[in-house]
Image 1 (tube, rainbow, N blue to C red):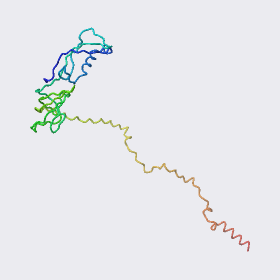
Image 2: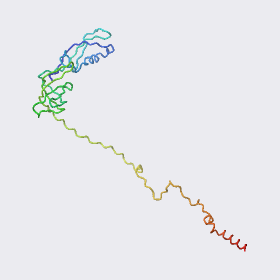
Image 3: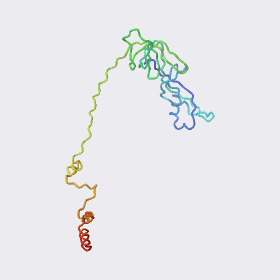
Image 4: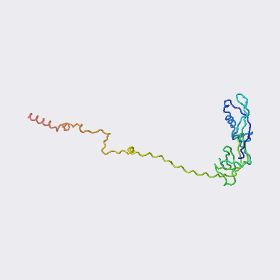
Length: 229
């Protein structure tokens, strides 16, 4: 993409003494704090920093911080009107299309007169930059749709076969665990106490016969009547 360029620039950085042992990673972190932001000095937005090196061996200490001059290659995104850029459609309205360039920068594209060339969300498109707008550290673009990019269709992936769990081998000795126990016909119900006929007490005969019908009492009455006569 022509809008991306590399510029070698020197910059002054104050490093904390704690970061002296890992100064290269600390310096790169300090330079990348302005990543994706527009810079007048760079005339674009910073994307990355490469080939970082410290200029000189002696450095001043200012208010407890180490003053260092560094030099690095700054990768910068600097679009200009007339350039053709690529992006992905992420918004759609009745009059404009929202496009994302490099997954970072926004671009507003006008709807083309040809209704057959209206892309859908997620489509990759090419557009011509008509205006670059800078608002503080934010940069976005306006443009007109040029074409819809058709990429080669990706081969379809075959569905994975479902792996069934292996069945455990049946053990004849454990077969009894799978057999359901059926109730026996002559089984004894343990819930009721057993009845034992040998312990049943038979009532006396006199207790079952009423007094009027007792033979012993009737004989006594007959003898008494004879004596009275």
